[in-house]
Image (cartoon, rainbow, N blue to C red; front, side):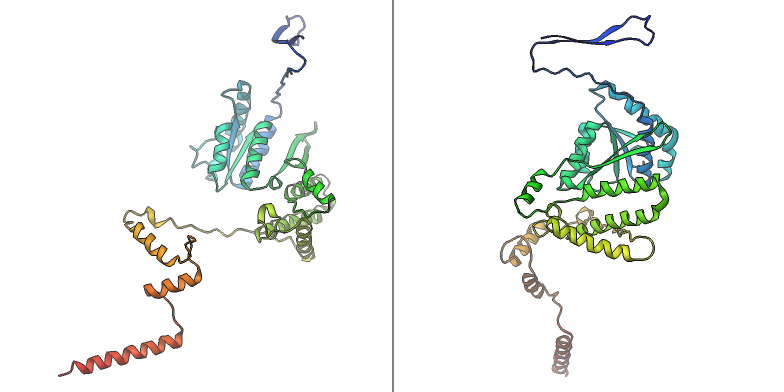
Length: 353
């Protein structure tokens, strides 16, 4: 039991010190925390954040809880100053601010958690305090069904301006899987966050000591692409690819084989590029949309013979024949056309005077 005083002593010791906060501690379980929140690295963070958003062509947002934690106001102010001075025109020229008022937007952390669920097409970046960052990346990991999906890198700077980077898988260890492995049980561990952290560290090391930079970068890019391709093609671990996904050992083997093939190729590493698919809006949004959905549902139910809510191929064949859209073989089509021609000729003969 006793009192905890937080006292500020001015730099000029001639000035009087004063108590910032005083607490009465009534038991041995209570904890008193004094939080020091220096903002000396915010300008560096701003430059790194806005540069990465421009490189990735995504919309930047700054996230705080400054409505409650007033000391976070300075974070937003400094981020906005750097944006206005150095980056706003670049983002405007890139067309990245058209949907957000043509300016940098602030999000309260509560709203940010909701927007991550709503913005399913991605295309945004968020800068925030450490705790908010932990919360938001946890959420992104769960939206994508696996904590192994996320990696993290911490950035600092030496006195000479050299960047210091620490890379890690974001969300802890895999103690449960390790214990299963020790018991001889089958595991399916997603190593994506861990490996991306490792190759990120290798890339940064190659930047600091560039003697073998080209060879290192080829390996790291090829390793990433081999892992990404495994997940894209259904050869990932079970957290991402479902029950038919690979075990830990099968995934490592699949990536290793692909990585060996990529490294054996001459020239720069292969990099997958996504084909842009323009989605057509639903006809339901047209002004002249007047389908009788209840009647259409009745037709659907008629051919959904097993009532599972979908049309199987055999059910589709029955439906296509009944509604007259079935495709028939060319030989049968020719024979049918011949029969129709002969029938038309007989009808014409019958009507002659």
